Length: 313
Image (cartoon, rainbow, N blue to C red; front, side, top):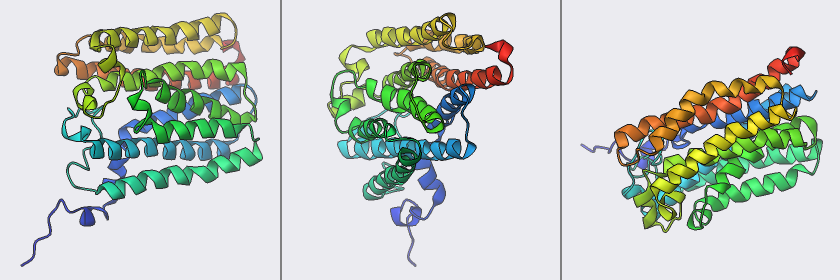
């Protein structure tokens, strides 16, 4: 009698759930709220196409999934996965160490997700303007170079802040309007701070493992206490920026809805200094995730409400 191991990559390769989990779906809410934020602003400025919004969301989901998958591949090949402390918010999918997929399968999956996003970018570059191309090229470089190269340079957190925060907001706005504006930039800056912080706080539990691959994340190069200070500063800057833009009349008054997330942000800041106690640190990571998702979502809702009810502008 021949028994097939339940951990066999060949058998698991046919399991759609396994492939789905490899994308780390818990992080794919971020592209959704960023598209809502950028599209909401475009609607506020007088442009909205539901087909373009859906297509842009598909493209951003593919790009974000590609980042997650390729990061898993490189982490496994570098040996980081064998030393990492896995939490609900960091440490990868765990599927490669569990032998549920092979490294080759994961590599090809990540590349295919990235390549599938290319026709969407080409489409928008044709129908809305070539000015989208530089944004797409920079985003692609951030995706491809992040894990193998950028993580080995000082302060690598800028890359996800740019590629997965600022550029998606600008891109979602451009595919609707065919232009870049200062108001779009103003809406994108908070997303940059937030996504930078998302990666920064999630790097704390991985610091020792990341040293194996010669990575230079802020918790490694500056130390965890200084990294927690940096995290706190970026969080505060997010709120200061939005309030300043409202005062300047660049954002509608309703954007102050984001202040509803302050209790979550405070919990995340306070918890970031408890990095020596993982049991206390994980709730801070959870509060950080909710802050990162909540602010762009509330910003998008704010722009929509200001469009429907001009008194809220």
